[in-house]
Length: 401
Image 1 (cartoon, helix red, strand yellow):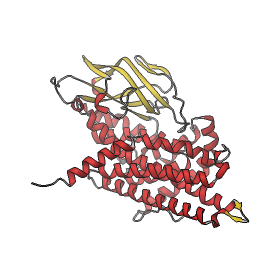
Image 2 (cartoon, helix red, strand yellow; image 1 turned 30 degrees about the horizontal axis):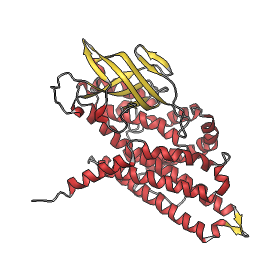
Image 3 (cartoon, one colour; image 1 turned 135 degrees about the horizontal axis):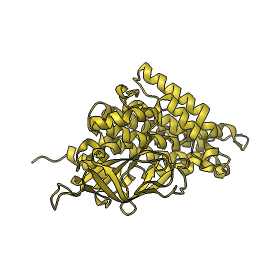
Image 4 (cartoon, one colour; image 1 turned 30 degrees about the vertical axis):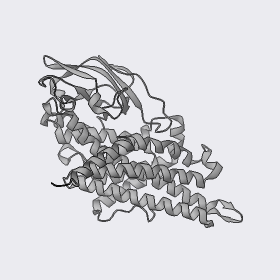
């Protein structure tokens, strides 16, 4: 491990977990990631290995069979995994958000039913908020849940589900108008439903279809899908928390920790890009000496390393604030914004250091160059983060009188 992106004040247990994950990444992920990515192949063996390490239960409380670790521990593990292959961190992240929402907001029966099997990876989660026509405007969702006796009937189309095919539990946000008078604010008439399904594509249960994988520029291997509900019946006891109208708050709480996760991914990808850049710069020679001895390249390496260090520090601060029980939307937004932007810049500089070889699929930097842009839009675009940051700053610094 190099000098960059170290985290002070970790416990022996945290250090041991991170060392184990780092060893797994170096041995089991980095050697095969580029080949699997080029084939767009789901990393089954890697996922099985992560199950054995207990990563799927990292933040699930010990009484449900998890490791009961902090958001910081989880984020640092994600950073390591993304350093190996960002798609693998995506497989874990949506699972983790659903488990977190269940832990924080689920009924006791829901926790007892799902969390022990989520801790082992037997039940794998996906998270469904976005729709084809709305992007970041969550208040405009049109998917509906209508009460029918002991069930709700769900209708609508969802978009951008990471793990949409491989998961067997999806947290789906729908509009439910029951008990909410006309004129109720849109975010107060939303409900999160816990939808169980079979893994796979096509009609995976009556009224629920996963059409197939969306073909993407990067972020391959992991399946990203649509979800179509047409008269899907969900029992009333699968309303998250047992109460309608709370879905927006549940999802925003999940997204808050998800933004720390995306920041961690940006840190991991940027670290790997720096490693590749600094290594190549010492091997490649021009004008009779390694290009690392040219001042132009040293300036690039200096800028890249500074960005890696700054993004890591902001991400760690955001995770620690959430762990302390405080609201962290400002810090999470800043961390996600900075880490994703810096990741793109560090990857591009590493790409430039590689010269023409960076354009070749033979070199790992080519894969990173296609992966980094996803972080600019995942869990809310940079513009959304800046809106959140700006509003929170105005709340904090409101002029008195």
